[in-house]
Length: 415
Image (cartoon, rainbow, N blue to C red; front, side):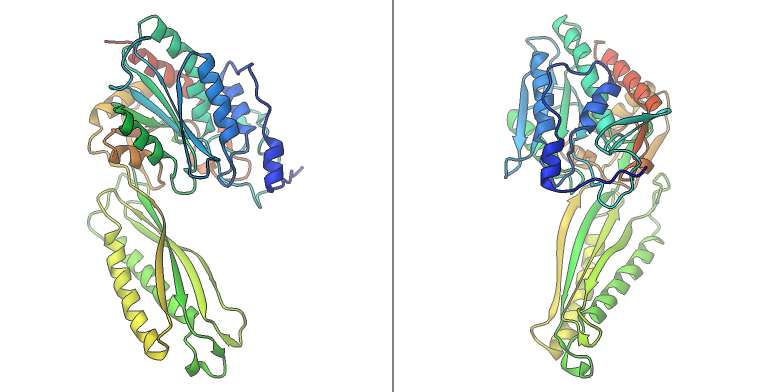
């Protein structure tokens, strides 16, 4: 059976579960509860955030929220202090996760994506691996952390940071980091719980997304000299981007620890033209750049801007009103491993695997490292299952994450 789902705002509103005071008592139940909140990025995440806030406050914790400009989305930050009267501003370890998920539009699911389903050894549902599984395990850890804090046995604060809109450019995390800076809170480390099969990811690439608008001049296709063909000029720029991508793959500063060891450029979408017999006056395309941590956007922007200037000159000789716009839509920094040796040693001991991994996908980790907080990525599930129909996480992965966080908590009780 294939389950089809509506994607309207009314559907999203109707799907939100009712508030509850009977909170889950294990990670599987927490994950099932979190999946029931339809937090696709185009919708609000407030229902989920308010539920987590109420849970934390029931545990006696003070919760801080930071909102987007429209006030329909919020980040959550909460701290279990090292003792009931301890200063929360110094040190501690952040467990970070994003609450938004990608859409299910056009995907063929065999079960309701917003109703967690266990089949065999897997739990299915949107966000099960990316990345509500980690959040579920972190929420399940809080009562034990609070108990240790009240007993005076917790010697390092534990912070939980939940953000909005990671999937559309990591928009929420900068607000959390700005709020922490304003409040003088300086965590020692951060663990971002993106799906890594509970292995340690020490670095990832950055990503920048660009939209290119080529403005030509319309004419009848039998009178091509009277027009400026936007598609033709877009194709020349796309060819230049592809050639630049090829050059990136042959640079001598690649990093073999990455799954793709060099920086990449990729054209993703293109739109243009209205009819075959009309010289098109507009063509738009998008491309993304995924850079190794030691490279910058200027490494590709400068040559692309030079090509744009060359094409603009050619176009405007024929029609002064024509030209090319290059607009940046997203920018997420790379995460470097240059300052997190001590954290890597700790995580290697906790996951019982010293292998360091580096990945091509981007996370909020780069924003934490840019803020001076050494960060690693480690969480349940496989990135290969993310964003797909029938997204799932292995139940064994949730168990491994529970064990990892419990060992982390025990580490925070040692002096």
